[in-house]
Length: 107
Image (cartoon, rainbow, N blue to C red; front, side, top):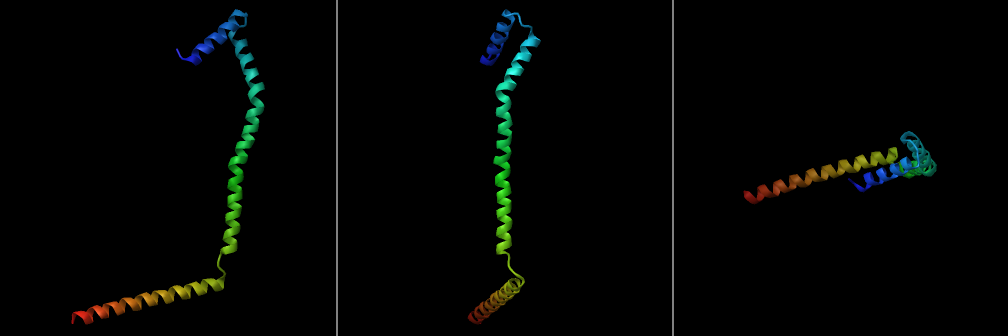
């Protein structure tokens, strides 16, 4: 028998000694538990919602504002495309130069 089971047996045995039937004892226990834990559980649900919801909402709002503030304009997009194209041409040119140098070294 576990400690918890032993406690329950002793608890309900005391009710039986006082002449309280099991259904009435269960009602008393539930009523006392609701009086003690009811406000605490109500508060904890609100706190849990705030603890989970608030960071998500703030993070989403902050991320949206950051994305809007740092997103490139249409002119910037065109400049980026030009830079990427220029970089691709430079890589291709250097690759051709390396191949030519290798062929010259082998001939």
